[in-house]
Figure 1: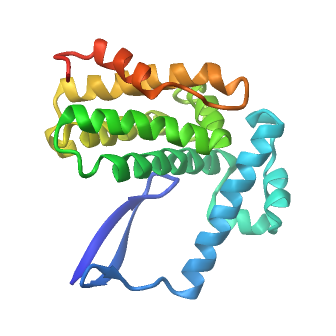
Figure 2: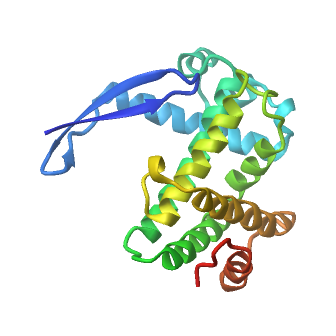
Length: 224
């Protein structure tokens, strides 16, 4: 069976990636593809390290490539610009959290249970990946058209909230209600607001039950 996945690359263009499955097992990527993914991951990890040392605006492409120990030209094989890189990294960080949330919520049958699992995953992610979490906050502080093409930053945020809403509600993105999106926005806003104070100390040590109670108290049509 052949399954087609559609991805948005970091310049908001469309490309089709074809992956062949046999009994739901993916055929391993070729050597060149594996190498490209490894380089991309190294550049992402290097950026997160560099942004811990300096503000995002002061970190250069050379700083990132030297930290990753790759040639500067390799960076431009992956990304057209630093803005392109920042947007791709932000999408990657959000995707890593959503993967963690899905792994914890996928078997939960009720909205309330999926909400609890998602909040737990948010705290788990912030605890396990503080540098990625701090980068998320810093990117959230930019104005909509301050980085990349006009509207790109807003589209990344909207896509993330839609995926978060779909995860909690159990519905497809196309079938989301206004209530579903409001719940996702509450989780995003209250969850990250609670985490932000902890990040100043370099650690996250929050009570997930207390955070969940606060979110549920603010829900439209409360999910108890």
